[in-house]
Amino acid sequence: MVVVITAGVYNFDGKGDQSLAGTPFYKHSRCRQRSRMAFAPSDFDQRKSPCGDRSKRWWQRRADEAGQHEQIDPLESVMTGSGSITVRDAVIEDMYEVQSIYAHYVAHGLATFEEIPPSVEELFRRRTAVIDLGLPYLVAEVETRVVGYSYAMAYHPRAAYRFTIEDSVYVAHDLVGRGIGRALLGELIARCELGPWRQMLAVIGDSGNAVSIAMHSRVGFRPIGKQQSVGFKLGRWIDTVLMQRPLGAGDGEPPVLQGFMLGGNRPAIEKGSNFDVSDRAARWMAAASRTGDKGS
Figure (cartoon, helix red, strand yellow):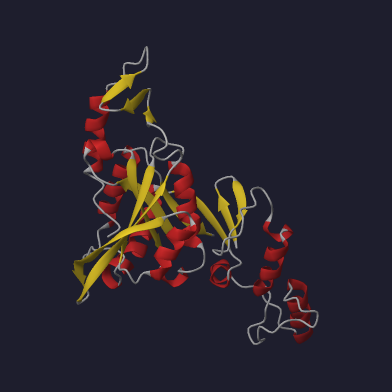
């Protein structure tokens, strides 16, 4: 699978491959082997070639012999692990597809504790609240279809929490397990590490949500606890799993934000700075209180 993140091209199959920034997908040997899936005729089984390599060339030769060579569409490529994903900033027009993705989980899933799907207008408001905090709101796209989205939000509106954020990731339900979520979460972490935030938490609805727990573990989250039977949805009690990972320097040094450093119980304003710490905290609390949706 190729993951295109703004200006880069990356190999990403959801199984721990290293990113190959700027390296075309077809030049990587493991990717070259997997690309056979785009050429495999539908009635051929997935047996190995005589030389032991399930190669693209072998499948193509067999298909040509059978006169059945066909190309599959990009979304089917993602289903088989060989498609191209673009991760980019969300725009207003994306929110219609975002609403459709999220509405499925509200109505049928336990990842979110909402029970009534929010309107597109409500999601407009939530996106604006995220952006007002300077946090990223991203979508994953295949061709022209939005297949997933992710964003970070304030973990808590109290001012002292302002260096801690919470992630939220949703993938189109028919494409779960194809590396889309990990691509979104990886880029979300990278973006947030460019800012002042030092800890990222995941509040995962349903302790049986193995896909989400595994995805977070692969990008450095560790479990820190479980809240037992805190939700009731779809006729059952639901736990939430708490996971956490540091961002940047983590708690190794005091945070620096917009010309001031917080250390001990009082801010140390840099010389010449007119930045008001209390004003920043007030604006953070106001924006944080508007983010609304939590992952659970």
